[in-house]
Length: 209
Image (tube, rainbow, N blue to C red; front, side):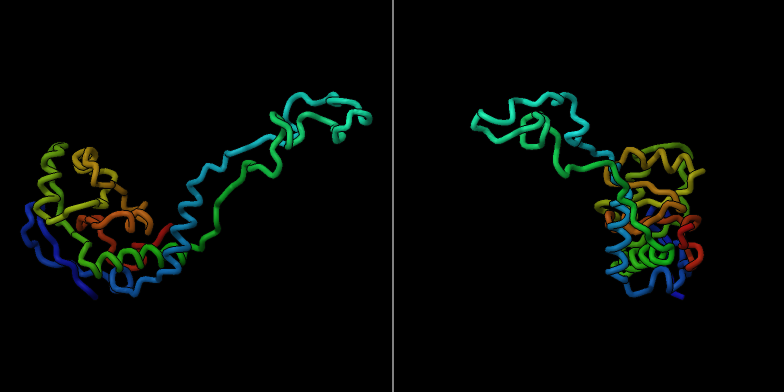
């Protein structure tokens, strides 16, 4: 098993923690990452866009002019698509953009993203945050002590209210609960920051339910 250095919030060494090679040490599967991220972004789409067809646009029941004798092309309604105010031909209708993604692929994408960040040395493990009270200044100082510059994904426990509130106002930090960890959010951030309590140490713990 591989090991990752553990630090305190002041940046000092606190030993090492053993992590599974199949979570933090695999060769990233780029095609699977692409497919899973694409499906995740597609699922976010509301799919509520809608246009009216000529049957749904109000009005147009009367024939605009007689069939013959005007010299114009015959017309049956002013709500045909080629008229101003008419219906839309082949326009979008409400639909779902969800893609079926097997759980094994989602899990492989997550492990690939974690392995990619670990290979770059961008996975940081903190012994414990230990905030006595919510304080943004303390959270900012902790990131500086850990050498984290740029966007960071901080994995938190949902019951650790002081830590959540401390990081909440930092624009460069994204908070995520351990159970919600996913490939897309990892790839959107330069660093992934765990505490020892939220660190997945085995393949089964990183699995997406």
